[in-house]
Image (cartoon, rainbow, N blue to C red; front, side):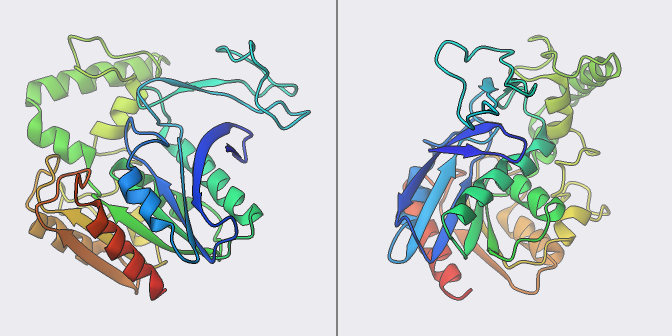
Length: 302
């Protein structure tokens, strides 16, 4: 299925379960994943009276091209015109995205497109489920988008600070040099230029690097690496929130108990729930059924 965002870009998605469900779980994937990732967490959420939807948001895979609709037909560009720089009837231009080039704040447009699609199907009860960096996206969306009564809650699966992880697992000199290069490229108005391979091992452009790995970015909203910093964006969210951590998260840089305490202290929603999945890694490999059970039982009460 094609999801059309408010800014008229096309995102590909998959729908599982009833076409007219009482409740819908919208899954927002993390870095480099796509609509075909994490199906052990997505598909089982579709059951009696419930459906699940996943889609490739603008950060899917490493490098991707996001196409606009043809303004006249509200359809994707015809075969043969799907090339970089395709311009629709009214000037909406294709963009390069993927993990390497994504602009984090565009997640509002992406998620709004998914929510609008669900609402067009008549869904009245929507739960946003973010995994990894998808957690930052749904929190940012909820803080920036106009309130939508159909959104009944948010689920954070393995929420982590990429900045904190980079700070813990990267040589300070390497991180400092890469940050300096990225800032200089942005200053020179070259935000989408890739960092040189001898500066950073991953394929990533300057603005995306700064968004993920510096403490002053909008994406750095889980601020447990800086205990004195108030996570203002997270504090804004009032819908019910379920936070699920993996006990053996390989990307986690602090103990699960400490992370759990941090989230308990900074989620301001009156209805907040927490769980830790024993022996689980970041993707809950082989233990997805436990996560699905936690989410399903939580949603039944809301």
